[in-house]
Image (cartoon, rainbow over all chains, first blue to last red; front, side, top):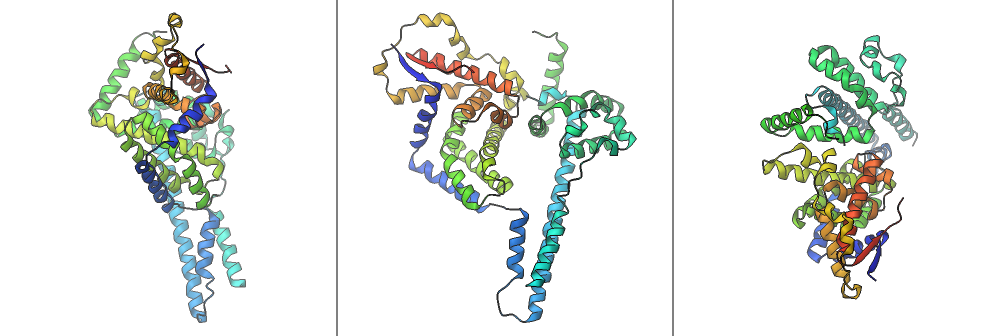
Length: 115
Length: 123
Length: 193
């Protein structure tokens, strides 16, 4: 009788629509992706350490005192990053407390903000 | 070589510092905090660490609140703790967005809510 | 921890669907592009070092909240702010939705259009049209479940609601979809679970 579709058929149909984007849109999407990748921040310890490692282990032929400066510089960098990270953690936490307090004591009841 | 190893080792030690797990057990709270957070005594251990820190902050701020706000807090804190992490996250986002709306519009919404809440439930 | 390449692969795999999702929601391709760009940057900046397996859910959550932010800014600009409509909160379920009347069983007596006459593009247009008319939360739940292929638990986590709410939203969306398609002689079916 009528055409029969299953719910599972909808995804491929929508996929097909997604494939049919015009080149302008695609270009802009690719540009967005490149921009996002440019801002890729890795704050993982391993990444920090590798940055630090690069700073410290220079394969160059500098005299001894330059090596020591690099080492000190590396420590300073580490300290600055840690201080920055630690502060960020603290301020993010502080924000949480303020906002939680506000939500719990506001004149609008809590359930207004909950789905 | 050895010098670099030492540096990396000390870096590792330093890096572990901000990431320490400082889970607050219920029994480690002060009696003042326990009093304020009393409705949560049973569920405390199941709450995530980030919520512990936040709730302790809220408890610390409690004494300085007006009696009205203290009462609202006491009335709602158990529900708050009973939400999922996602619900709390969304609630914070909604609250934050709402707080950026101009004062008069916020007031209008609050008034609307007060009127609705005053009516008997429709279902 | 994900490499830049893994992040790149993920973004490439999701960008078209993300654009379409945003476009269905805001009905403005220009704004949709901005939203997707915004969401990609946020994912990269805030969660770029998370395991790649977490990207789909993280990105969907970011995408949905970025879409919501767009609506909120629109609403504030239009000076018609309402806590309910902006955030699609619990009152979403109580909105009168014109499509709901199509669920009326009396419509089942309408004659079906011969299926041969319908092109794929017409079906697509019908589906996209229905999607655009759905309340925001219903559309969100529907697309996360049936296009992004997330299960109810993942969808609930992205949407910040209970699994029960997800099922309700999905049920309403699929019924609205089925009603629209039925009027054109297409029988949409699914396994009820």
